[in-house]
Length: 223
Image (cartoon, rainbow, N blue to C red; front, side):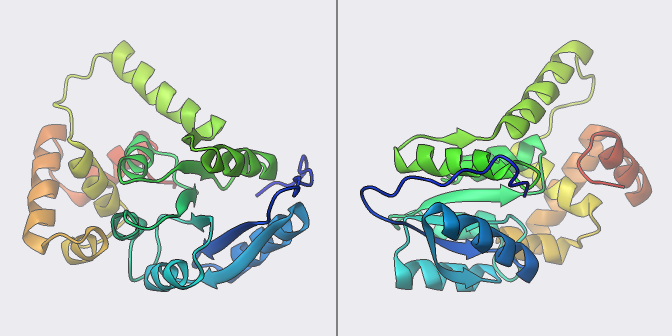
């Protein structure tokens, strides 16, 4: 995350506390190096979803900063399990597709910031959620707007996917099996297969190769 424009945050009332949930040690270390000089205390670091859940319950931070693709317990299920906890969850993600952003916010995330955002934007998100507001970074908002405008302009001929079908199709395009998708989303393999089959039919796709090509064209995945 770019820290070029980072400025120290005020700390006149009390120290803001966070738990980091990120599978990559270097990313966690980088976030800690940015957060602590800005007056934000990192209480603990988690490398998977189950650790994140346990650390939030143990340390009671103000904020959980979490990636989406957490090992063992996907961020979608983590958000469901944290629904009764008094913690603000800000998703820090490399995924900027409409389905991921919408699902995170629907499941209770207070904020969504892309990893390519500046550190200043992350502090804006922290300030906003602590004030009881929702925050989606400028780049993610732009991505959603472009998709919405593109759909309106093109007037999609294909049947629209449901949010869950879109998420399953994106994971399938990344090469995930039905069992892996089921584990990530806490649904049965049969349900995952059903969502994938319906999505393929709606989009007029027949093979995995066609799905991957379509996903690349729609910017669901990177080459």
